[in-house]
View 1 (tube, helix red, strand yellow):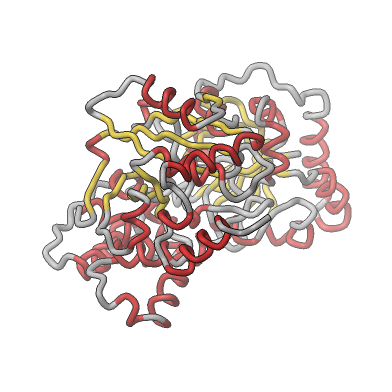
View 2 (tube, rainbow, N blue to C red; view 1 turned 45 degrees about the vertical axis):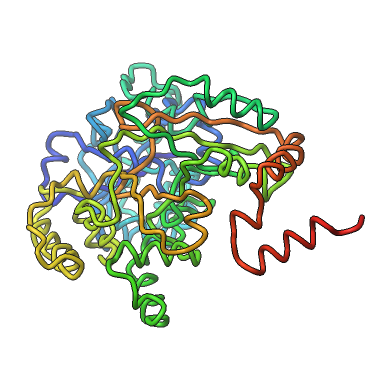
Length: 447
């Protein structure tokens, strides 16, 4: 195992100071799910593993280093490290080994911190014929320094509580067995007038609370994010008449979401019983999950809000442009890239003032959209929209409180029956002719 840190700094201060910052949302990107599962209850152990650090680029220098400390600084991990003997080698020197080292081509151009299943011993063996003798010795000495030092004791990780919340399944949970049980537990919670409760149902409690555009493969790579602008433009180009009545990018994203294109939108509902239905339908032999999300009123916007327009138009930017905006104002091309985003925003709102706060495009906001289709109306629907590097983390310091209501699979069938008595079923939640026909034929089918 080893750590891989890729950074996007243009200057060399990170090298001189031995400090880099990685957004908490970029931690464990391009890390296999099996590796995350293995270390989720003992995450601090990974800081004792060897570390490779490199700048973004096509053929970057790769440095051997040791992580000294990790601390939370806002929404960033501040990582202090020590370069081993100030030597480096080129990415091209090890390019034929990247499969063994579990490095994917697309990740060397994205700032992140990954834990890799590959072994640097493979790099040492390979180096016998590819690296100069002095570099081979440095690599061997470097690896030898870790032999007895897998559990590194002097680490200070002040953000472990936050990290644990991201990796451990559901800190704040309740178990429910019936509709009555669920309603009673909902009513027993304290209700704050400054917050609104929204709900989402997952048929499998292992599903993550994230929009489809941020979903990943088992190996940690993104399924859709890197082609977000292409998928948006392709669907719009091939089906333009379908979107003719939509007045904004956000309206188009809602329609695209309705037809299952991956977007930054996450469907939620104001009705907890609708979320309970979705938690009990689908994958029957798994634990279902109703997620209660307490949203501050100041994060609830309407479809025409400026913040909603800003975040929605991120979908039109190329992946590299979004990387530049993620890096912040210290990135030399930040202002130029913001101008591109302004141009897209003004296609929705020609009067828009060019004064976006950097934090605005990195938020998660709740949006009440237009009731443009029967399903949104039937499901009391709203949306969470995710900005750049946004992740839904439990805790008032992050703006949201989250509770998980878990349903074991043995209770799902009876809960679906109880919900049907309350007129919550496939016919009422998906009010289209084919769904009504399906519901009626199943209901009156003779067994």
